[in-house]
Length: 98
Image (cartoon, rainbow, N blue to C red):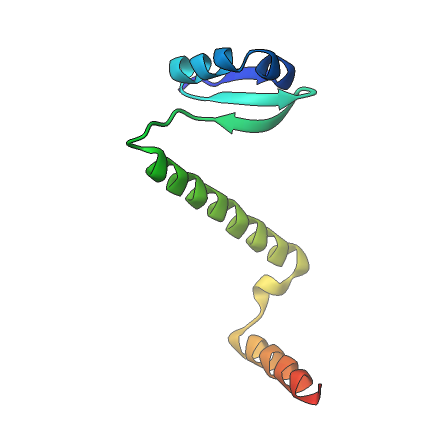
């Protein structure tokens, strides 16, 4: 599938052209100062709820990947179940003191 790139200024000036490009190419990447800012994909009355669910799954996947990368950078990906239980107990004890 080809991706058409459209500058945000072009999109603002002629949104109809961007919508036509989505129909023709299948997706359009909107840029600002040459950097990606938004992706437009085709949808319809019949498929928009499935399309939104697909985008939600993609966003969730990105969030999980970011969390995993953060845990590796912080070294907490190597915590054992015993370490995690100890951390939970420490936090619960601190809450009881409040």
